[in-house]
Amino acid sequence: MLLQGIDHVATITADGDRLKQFYIDVFGATIEMDGPEFPGGPRMIVINIAPGTELNVFEIEGNSQADNQTPMFGRGRIDHIGLQAADLDTFAEIRDRLIAVGASNRIVTEFGRKLSIFFRDPDQMECELLVANPDVDPNDLHFGTPSARFN
Image (tube, rainbow, N blue to C red; front, side, top):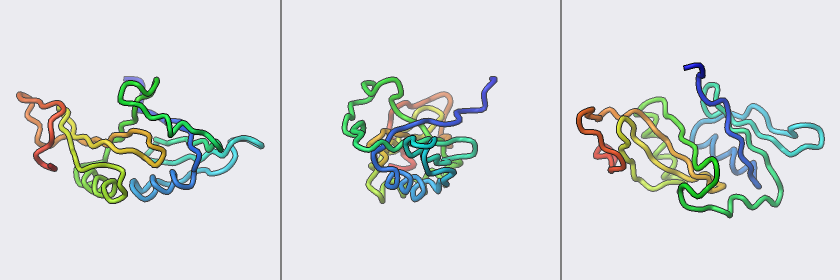
């Protein structure tokens, strides 16, 4: 493979402070930049969510995109973002944080080699947290079933 991963995903918000605080509180993210993208331009917040991976958030007053949520596969070109936890313990900690802030239910799902929990950020963007499934049986892969480890 010639790539190392995704550098950033750009999103639009009407409330940059609320969104950046969510990623700081739940994921331990850091803020690299918070100000106009260019003189007179929209506010841009660069949120470091993992080594070499950012959310580039543009705050646009009056933007109502967060109000236009549709079911999976009806959201446009980018349906959702999948974030990878560093390890199983970190996955469990982030899961607890997501539940505590009301961003997710408790359901962890097996998707073959991975465990997954879906959540919505404060702008209602659908996201997914994933980690390697330590209980995977390569001869009996489960896709879309609740994980016995967490449920």
